[in-house]
Structures are given as structure tokens and as C-alpha cells.
Length: 184
Ligand SMILES: [Fe+2]
View 1 (tube, rainbow, N blue to C red):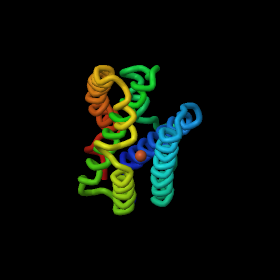
View 2: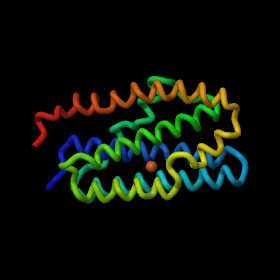
View 3: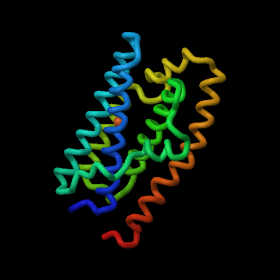
């Protein structure tokens, strides 16, 4: 069983997004300060890079082509909301984006026709996210507690609105590129 072009596109999209996340975290790990923060950011960079590697390996393993030009989920957010200029916005966006990616993976895991090898990879990524503390007590969450409640709430509201728009866009882009009816 070979994945469809639609599935391959999505795997590349996820792979490029994980890589983009890793590169962003890597840049922050080279520019911010504070041992605790930098420890967390460096670990986050490594986790995202590991996810990108797992997805890259599965694309290759399934006989697909690794395509760095597919685009990233981050591009959708910056198209709608611009590029964050202050750290609090960047942290909030990272949190919102992380949750969006995880729910996209869960959605894929719920689809019946998912290739077993892709299932293994997505389950491993989700398990790793959970081990590294998805949800309430992530380093992002802890760091955001250092900012004013109002500032964080404003930023969360803004990026959550953008997030709702982006959530719809990804699948409509996918549907326009690969209409579901034509899939084998
Ligand atoms: Fe990830």
C-alpha cells in the first residue's frame, strides 16, 4: 500500500513545519538568555528536529519524495497575523501552533485509511509531545506566567482568532490541490 499524493503532500507539510519550528527554537536558543529558559528551548529545538527527522524518514521509506517547497503551517499564521515582533507574541504563537499541529496529527490518526508506518510515526510524535508536557505545564506556559496577565490574554485572543482561520485554510488548500474524489 502506497500513500496517495495527498498524503505525501501532508507528510511533507508536517515535516517542513516541524523543521521550521526546530530552526526557530534553535535561533532563540542562540539569542535569548537564562539557563532554565535556554535549557527548555534547546530541548524543544531537539524535539522538533527529531519529529522532522521521523517524518522525513517515513516519506523516504514509503518511496515518496522529500519536498522542502511544500510550505509550512507557520507561513499560514504569518500571512494572517504577520511575524511576531515581541517575545510574548512569539511564545503565544508557538503554543497555539503546537496545539494546532497536535490536533492535526490526532485527526490523521483517526482516519481509517492511514498507512500503518505513518500511524507509527504520528503516534511516536504524540507520545513524545506528551512526555515533554503538552498542555498546562509546558515551558512555554511557565515562561508566559512571567508576563502580565492582560498582555498574554490579548496575545492569546489575537492568535486564537488567526488560528481558527488557519485551521480551515490547511484543509481547503489540500482539497484544492488534491480533490478527495480523485483519490484511489
Ligand atoms: Fe513537533
